[in-house]
Length: 308
Image 1 (cartoon, rainbow, N blue to C red):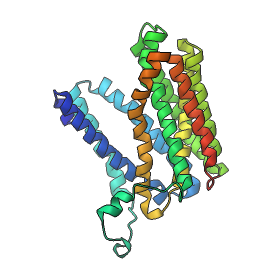
Image 2 (cartoon, rainbow, N blue to C red):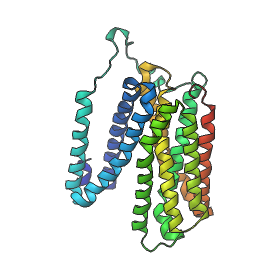
Image 3 (cartoon, rainbow, N blue to C red):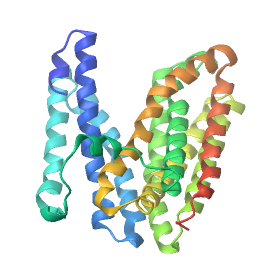
Image 4 (cartoon, rainbow, N blue to C red):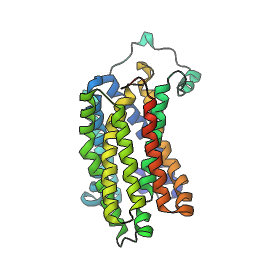
């Protein structure tokens, strides 16, 4: 991350950004494995809510640091990298890391290692449905946010599109912050997961539909806030749900890494899908398709059987 700020070529930036994302995903998969390893089932919604809250606050605080505290690119990058390392120290030092006894760990083989990334949908259908629904929701959120700036500029003719985009992202983040922990806690208290994920997915779908059907900035603000409220509940409860459908305790980190593919792949696919939709059919079609994707995700959650 630090070296990126000194780069002057697109190729160098691409290679370094690839390394940043690869390392971040490794760390994230390991950190999310702490939830099923360390947290009782009836508290996972609450803890997952705090994890989701941290993701949103991290973006907000990071942007604030490099925009207002240290606006210089290179110094700001050093600051963000330093903060990231410092914030990881308490987890590494104070959280006890449960380990399997060496005698029960099978010998390492590359074939077994690579085959482990395939989790059979036939043997573990709930895990497969959880992966599919996570993929659809992240695809929907990526489609909903990728062209916000151009939606404001080209479709709404908003006079200050950059400022408007910041406002919409801020409202989206605010909605997420408001509901993430509350949604997770309510799910824990009720003992139910699926109904919260279903309702959250439908709320997200309907909120995006506002952008498609009501083309003005006030409606866009409402839609962004509602999208955030649904996403906050989804972040908390779906993560808790996923921890309850993992195939085997000894492979939790690996299986959560497989789930993490459902988070990252849609960010690659979204531009490919969004560009022709906007070009051929316009922004209402883009947001309409996004709404369909999100509502479909909520419907498919019903096929998960082992979690109420």
